[in-house]
Image 1 (tube, rainbow, N blue to C red):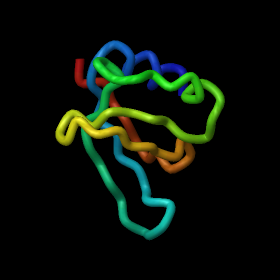
Image 2: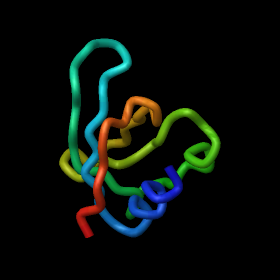
Image 3: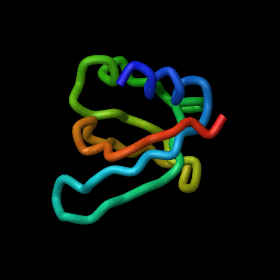
Image 4: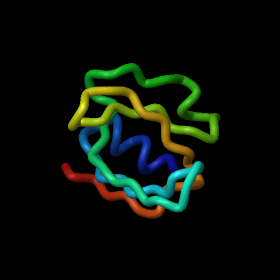
Length: 72
């Protein structure tokens, strides 16, 4: 998870994750650049990230992440 956090702080990442309320899978491009890097990202079970598409904050449960990759 530390590698993902470093990648998000340095640029944009593709993240695919499973919804915790349904069986749906979601994916998108996310970053922490230009947004608030919540201190809880380091110890919480969730990541608070910024969607590059909507510019809105989203929270993703860390254990729900299926795959991710840096786009930088």
